[in-house]
Amino acid sequence: MKTMIGAYGPWVESMLPKGPGRLSLQQCPAGQFAARREQAKARVTALIAPPEINVPQAQCLRQWEFDGLAIEEIAWSQPAGGPTLAWVLKPVHATGRLPGVLALHDHGRFKFFGKEKIAQTGAVVHPRVAQHRADAYEGLAWANELAKRGYVVMVHDAFAFGSRRVRLADVPEDIHWGLRDDADESTAGIAAYDDWAAEHEHVMAKSLFSAGTTWPGVFFAEDRVALDVLCARDDVDANRIGAGGLSGGGLRTNFLAGLDERVKCAVSVGMMTTWRDFLLNKSFTHTWMCYVPLLPRDLDFSEIIGLRAPLPALVQNTRADPLFTLEGMEEAAAILQRVYAAAGATNNFRASWYPGHHQFNRAMQAEAFAWFAQWL
Image (cartoon, rainbow, N blue to C red; front, side, top):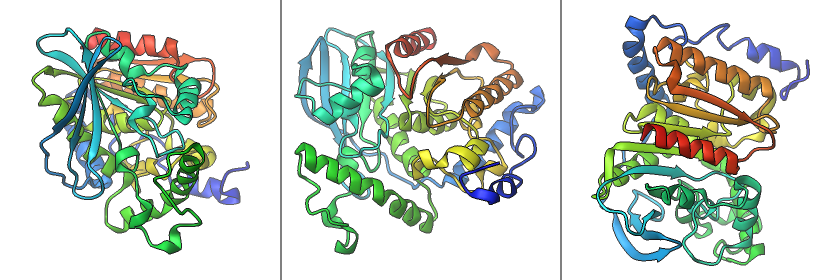
């Protein structure tokens, strides 16, 4: 068998549990499910080691209207790096408290932009973003499409993306690797920054590991603060909160929705497989942002979002997704079906399948929006 790590593959694979991990919920007796779930959530939280971030006061920077939506640009401070910028979208004439959704943008192999990938505010769309939306979202800014259906949708820049990206001026010259200006907003300048940022990922991951934290932990910490900001709004019903996203946004959904019960409805798109699939076949197709040392001994990858059971979760997959093997995606879905069966909530989980490549197309969005409507 050929593996990404050659003849070492079967030996390394043998280190994984032969069956469900130590804290798996797949075959948990009904009377023990809640206690096991809390134990597993505590273990995942300990392993991702999220840094403590005080909940900041968000500031509204500006307000305007676009395409039937009232839009706010808000910002909040962070312990380091630039402040997080976010857009909040809702129907212009909406009143009272609406259900809220935290829309989590993807990785997309470029970090100069974040929230712009999935939300449109009226500004001219950069060609890089327009091409990405065409490839990944069938041309739509899905956060806008969801907001029009009666939600307060918030989209914020994730750690190391957009307003939170690493600035060249803040790193030593010996790791500039030929890049001279990280603020050049020309097409070529943005492409050059994104190439640099891709190469810088392993540096960031190693530094986070050296500090005793992880990239999923930092994502979770910052996304949890964003959830705090969303839930605190006067126009949001904090008892009706959803979260979802594609790819890197699906990864962030898995952790946030798995660990924070304020998320009442979750949609994870194009980010579901098994640790075995990563190990043998597909880790090379993924960012350093995915991995949590030691966790595979306790839970499989798909069981991270399964920690929210019996709260509802929709997982969407595409059969020709090059980031995973079909077998890995199918096994992950089967694992989650067993988890929800153990929770006595089989109707609260759905795995759906679509043709095509890695994407969140219009048909997938329609199903996701219906899922939010059903539960929120």
